[in-house]
Amino acid sequence: DADVTQTPRNRITKTGKRIMLECSQTKGHDRMYWYRQDPGLGLRLIYYSFDVKDINKGEISDGYSVSRQAQAKFSLSLESAIPNQTALYFCATSDLSWGTETQYFGPGTRLLVL
Amino acid sequence: AQKVTQAQTEISVVEKEDVTLDCVYETRDTTYYLFWYKQPPSGELVFLIRRNSFDEQNEISGRYSWNFQKSTSSFNFTITASQVVDSAVYFCALSAEYGNKLVFGAGTILRVKS
Image (tube, rainbow over the protein chains, first blue to last red):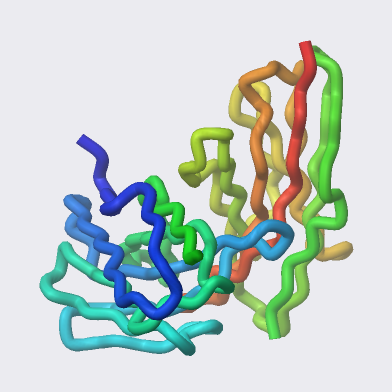
C-alpha cells in the first residue's frame, strides 16, 4: 500500500461549488503539506501543518482552507471553486530529522473547475 | 528570498545519449538543502536525492549523478546513457536549515526518444 494516499484522484466540479481533497499517510510523519502544480510554475505551497494543532499558510493560501483531523489526515478545501484553481494538487509528508527533512509526495489529485 | 531556476524548459535526446539538467539556486542561508524530484507521465513525484550545503561531494547512483558547486550556486543532474523510461519532468528544489518550505524550480521536461 502507498504511504501517502490522496482522494479523489480526479475531480471535475463547477464554479462556486465547495469541494474537499483528502490526504492520508501511514508514514507516521508529523508534518504535512498541500501544494498545487501549474504548468511552467513548478509546485507552490498552499498550507502546511507541523502537528494536529498547527496550521500555517503557504505562498498561495487565498481561496483555500485546511483541516488536520489527525496526525495521519490533512484535508484541503476549496470553499467556492473558481476556474483558475484548476491544477494538480499534491499532498506531502515529512519528518524533521538532523535539522532538515525530505518531503514525500502523494500521487496527486487532478482538479478541473468548469 | 530563496529561488530555484531551471532554465531548460524542455530537452529532447535520443536513447543512450547523456543529458544534463541544470539547476541554479539563490539563498542567503549558509546552511541549506537541495533536492531533485522526478515526475513521470503517471504524475506522481518521486524523490531522487537530497544534498546538504556543507557537503560538496558529487554523488553517483547508477546512471544518475549530481554535481553540486557552491561557487556557482548550481546543483546539476546528469543521466548517463539515457533510456525511454527516463522521460519525465524533473524538478530541482531548495529548503533552508530547519526550513519547512520547499521552493521548487519550474521543472525541465525530458523526452528520451528510442
